[in-house]
Image (cartoon, rainbow, N blue to C red):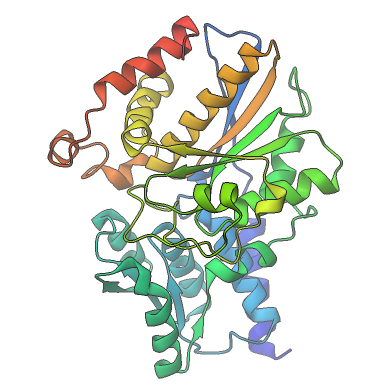
Amino acid sequence: MGNWASTAIRKIEADFNRSSDTHLIPLQIPALPQIQLYFKDESTHPTGSLKHRLARSLFLYGLCNGWIRYNTTIIEASSGSTAVSEAYFARLLGLPFIAVMPRGTSAEKIRSIEFYGGRCHLVDDPATIYEESRRLAQELKGHYMDQFTYAERATDWRGNNNIADTIFKQMELEPNPVPEWIVCGAGTGGTSATFGRYVRYQKLSTQICVVDPENSVFYDSYYSGDSDCRCEGGSGVEGIGRPRVEPSFIPTVIDKVVRVPNVASYAAIHFLEEVMGRKCGGSTGTNLFGVCELVSDMVRNGRHGSVVTLICDDGNRYLNSYYNAQWLEDNGHHITPWVERYRRFFFEGRW
């Protein structure tokens, strides 16, 4: 390995060494004291989302494979958060970065990518981001990171301070340290693959639930067994849901997939703002819906225990969409009945 690559790896490791782990935040469900709910707050990473972990792993993977060298242009297909995090690491290493993104990606995320020195290449059809990223990489003699292929293999799922490892360490002193369920969305599928492999490797009883928004293929693929499912357009919840089954999605390590209406995701983050005093991104709302489904099943079956899910990113990235009353109205999303449903569940135990 050359001197530049060794220095680059050291810079990334030093950046990691300067960082502390993210918090695990308990949220009481007043009507259900036998259930403990926790949110792993991934919004506190330097780039504000869960994807900071993935970007770090992808850069190390590319460097150690010899794919990233001095002055290599980094290209990524991303709906936003991965691109923000990769732009951060590209700037750390002094490398050019281009994010290939759907044109509807939030202006806040575009500004974040540009803040870190990245360039945004917008496409009209979300399904073309892969092909366009490959084309740009070939044209510029750059490296296409391809998070959708490499997410599940770039992360050390056995331990090494990955997200699963840190959650179980943080749970050690809790009343029910081994969660009944871990709930997460799927974009690449890398996070659910890490959770699923880790709990099996550690011989734990925890089950993994993936929540899937509207207009995404993971739910249909999981229950039909068809890995060639396709749909048109975006999911409506940035960062999760895909129009095709991504190579990093490993269905055999997942125990359940729940389909979530987009309006339920948007309403959930408004409810979470009431009970947590903070804004969370849309995919956190999708997670909460899944949590409520699973907890209601636990209660119905007389089971108690803990459930862990994620705050994937900060809601201030979505002030012009999910938190904007006019945007919700213009898009036909009437969140009030759903917000009431979450309140009823938390304070009366009825889902």
